[in-house]
Length: 231
Image (cartoon, rainbow, N blue to C red; front, side, top):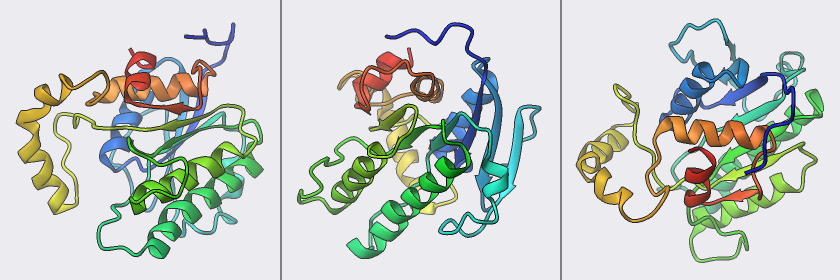
């Protein structure tokens, strides 16, 4: 993989979704990794951690970042791990809460920090054509395409398949808790299906940090790419 730029300074990172399973894993790696010097967590509620690297910005309206703009200046990267299930949603509603929300945040961040790198967690199976049969995959694909068209310094579309929850993590969504409790014993089996089919948090976090450093060789990263980049 490409090496980091010589003499590169530690990254200043903005993280969206720190209270979720993916976001909390990425946050933990950012706080532990010397490649990251500071983290701003943007969310509707506190993430529940205290660390010298970490600052938090409470923000309720994710469709309007005008008031938050002064706090978003001077950052090197954004790790966007927000996401909701498409279950029970119309395509219009899912588009608003996925495509519109993500693109609005991305454009606000670029306006505040024009040299920003951007990592977007989508999912394995995302449809780049935006015309496939799966509604969530179409919307995620259109979102990826729109992000890649923006002038980020580096961009990575993180097509995560599965993530091994960090010890002690409990989702606030009841059905997700039940699903992971049922699937946890099968994680070793899933890992045999192929590289990256189930990543641990440090591997995912390292992969995203390396995207922000310009060390990825392509913009769309499938599970096997993430495993290799984060190794």
